[in-house]
Amino acid sequence: MEPQPTADPRGTVETVFRIESPRIIAAVARTVRDVGIAEELAQDALVAALEQWPRDGVPDNPGAWLMATAKHRAVDLIRRRENYARKLQDIGRDLETTAPPEEPSALHDPDDIDDDLLRLVFTACHPLLSPQARIALTLRLLGGLTTPEIARAFLVPEPTIAQRIVRAKRTLATKNVAFEVPYGPDREARLGSVLDVIYLIFNEGYAATAGDDWLRPALCEDALRLARVLSGLMPKEPEVHGLTALLEFQTSRAAARTGPSGEPILLKDQNRRRWNRMLIARGITALSRADATATGAPGPYALQAAIAACHAHAYTYEETDWKTIATLYGLLAARAPSPVVELNRAVAVSMADGPEPALKIVDAIATEPALRDYHLLPSVRGDLLLRLGRTAQARAEFERAAGLTRNEREREMLLRRATEAS
Image (cartoon, rainbow, N blue to C red; front, side):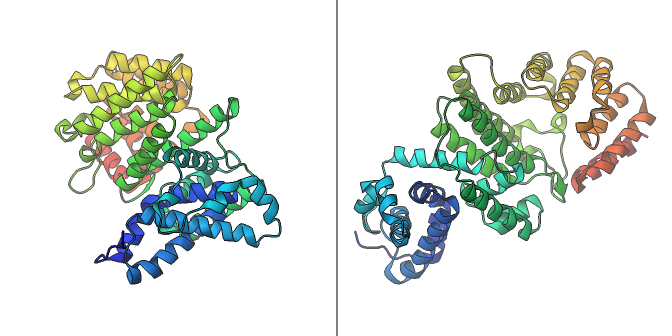
């Protein structure tokens, strides 16, 4: 078919590129074995589209056009290298048969593209990189975010994010990191890193650590989209489905978690009619897939999803099955022990058995180094003390929590609770 005219060819280019860029980068990286070069070639294809589409019209299959253009640039690059003959032998005959940019057939089989995406996920989250670098590179390569967008999302200076991305790509190149999906024990270890990166991205959007906004929906959406992609790429991995279920459940509450002025609304005060039932249904489906694919005890993300499901099934706060939630937190503490899990278990125990046994749990972990500057420790302790009638101590804990948080909305809420405890 002839290229189609459009009222906004530039907008079409940018939209298509944002959607297709992860697949394009993944496919080209398989050819050039370097995610940094692959991203540059994908950007070259974007520039070519910005030059040609406004003049010639948008191709019938714009994604295929971009893919083929980027792959042609990859072929040209390899041909310019002195070691072209060896590279050509390694890569195989497919380089010589790449279709011209106008042909939709330039796309590989969808399953092959999915394999390329999976390789890109594991490469971006390689343990050689710091957690911060993994997050930045994942959002750049798989989330399609620009450097300024990532910087704004995490309230980090743009040059800092740019340096993280450049250094991450340089590390992968200089260390000759293979563009592949690992297998065996290495795969299990690397998968944990991938899931942790997606979870960290989501958490920063769900309860921002700093800044004026408590909730950043765009980051939550990016993380959920990445989790859904990963669950499609790895349908037999229960923890992938567990993470996806957890994010579906958590995202379902987004509209009810803030008030008209952006102030936080605690779980017990949320209007549950504003919870998104479609996302809850998706979460239930993903959790059932996690259960169906598990061969042993549920993993940490599946357990957290099961806890979130208990909240989702309760149409009022009073109907919440706190006994089950406390039991699930006990299983999570045994499976993935951490002071933060213990703190969450204390909250569940307080609702199931009262504030006194919960306070004992909190006091037992109060000196943990990991919780030294964690504002939720004094916040939870303040709530327990308030319920025990120890108002002066509760007020002091809320004030301490307000001094520790870097999020303005949360600080306002904690100071208000301190005032109310007077």
